[in-house]
Image 1: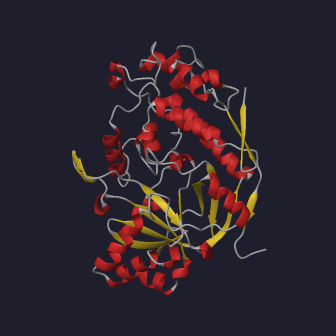
Image 2: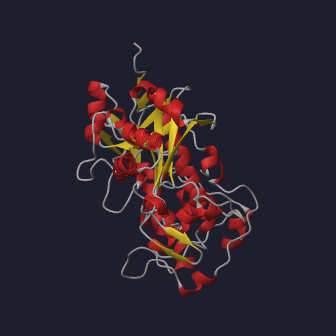
Length: 372
């Protein structure tokens, strides 16, 4: 039976039994929005083609005392099945050669969603409650005072100034930021933000700034400084130069890494929306993609600790993959490789169920700034 709850006038639908049906086998989830897929990869797992091995059978399962499935001793020695088709998240793999995005998604709380509907003002907050403005703005402040290149320092000052003083954090796919870091909750209301075609994107990487247009062509710092109102988004990556993982062969140190888009310049927003069918369809697509990914990797999940995994993911983002796998494509699509995104069954089940709970009956709000 499908449960329903109303938030902000939007009727959300979700399947309360999603976790249970995934743990018992994805094949049993048909009708709950999580579809089974009979593939060469899964046929060998369950025996007959189209059957499903319960998660508990391959990963230790839920014991008499309950609790999340645990990896069995044999799981660490498993061998992932060969990639016989495109990886689920291959189209979403993100790297600097495809930096620019016009369409971005940002999660927001019930309170802010209500304000958006009432006031239709997209950027209202200079910091997240209890979290500050974001570490990226500390970096801009440092670059503005310490950069040896005057143009770099001047641009950093622009980014840390009024232009992006009220901003939202975003990514190109909703699923990749929904869970955030443990202890954080960005909210379950999804905004779609579309940049104007003429917008430019600032890349913050390796302790320096560079500019690209939406065709991924470089823009000079001089042109950016002469036309700062065309700066539509900032792409920030917490790498080794900015306090993230130090990638040095087999020895990795430093802090956790992540990446994000920051949007805040309303002059470069073509439109933003909430509660539309387009947004719901994207959420549904993400749920289906994650369900397929779950089915393909559940017999051979990662065995790394959360920090080991974060370091390896961030260190691999800027290097071409020698062999594409399902997990590799998933990792290269992430924005926040926190323990909430570990590619293990129990984490994926939680992510899928969370997104199912975010589904809603469309009640569209579409705003085109500066136009009636």
